[in-house]
Image 1: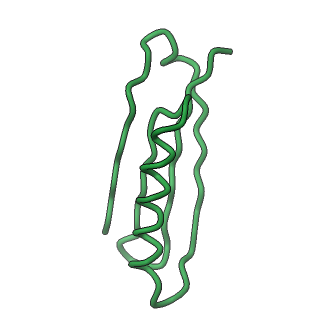
Image 2: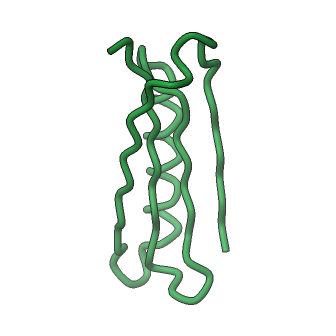
Image 3: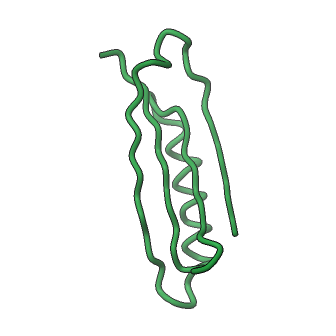
Length: 77
């Protein structure tokens, strides 16, 4: 199983106002490694965006084609 967790600094005042997005993905058979690499690139770029708190990538241990992406954003509302 592959797990990658990356977080940006979250201002203390905004820790209560989070939006969490979960995305389930199934990679084409044989393209799991390429998909994983692209997810890492995407996650690294996402962490540069204003408002993102973290971007996690989890690959299923039992089905290597199945990935879960978790993006956490903070907001001022």
